[in-house]
Image (cartoon, rainbow, N blue to C red; front, side):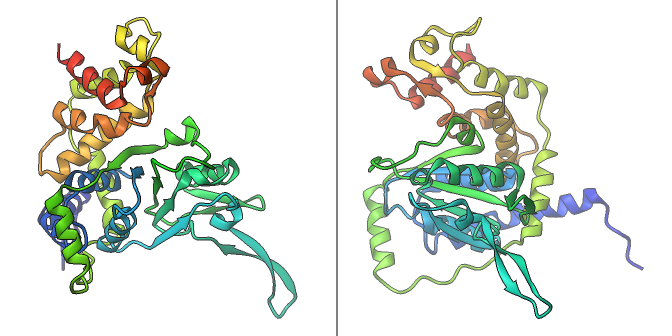
Length: 333
């Protein structure tokens, strides 16, 4: 008779499985993705922490391919939705249609593409606010509402939304409330020349080998539980709270350059995501606990879309990156 496993043993096995497969994740992704190690790590951290990602990058930098490849590795149902100015809420959440059941006609709900595990919302800022609001409900509540009826989304559920930093004509800027729901704002930059050469050689040669799934959706849900149990000292949590709070202008202890350059700072959710992200980063790197350096490493993707700079900062070519780095330096003192 087998001895039943305890929750602790299950969690220990999940951690061992993850650490043993970490190199294989990179190996599978390298079949189709060259470079972008930092971007990949940030997206994996968001996945294990259960957060959504905003991805900013110019066209042609393999944003869609990267998201789809990660979905394949974790054996998650993937859907790509191209956001356009004429996209309506029903186009993404689904709609009710009249069907003949043989016993009479009745309204039946037909699920939209939002009913998947991993959603790529391509060019999210090109769709009207009404459709963005429908996506916001899905992101926050993991449910959608159609004809007054709530429909629960399948877990795990992630939204990875892309924004094009150019061609801003005809776009609808995301409201701060929706931006705040994204755990990270991940920026994908152009590759170094040697990596671009490797991409061109790889994509114009033989077809890439298919990506092999290493995990399941159940594994991802278990990773969510494990991440939350990663030890973190109260001092490290306090550091995350202070880092987020230091970005707010017109407060009692606001720094002079924050008052001068920032219109709006990060809220409490930023500190929550800093701590969750630090725990997931520590887990991915095989560390026994989250530390201040994990918070600092994730400060930029967490704060990048939460700090709103003013016209003075823009006139002086001051960026959110500059402000975030100064905040980290200020808290060292």
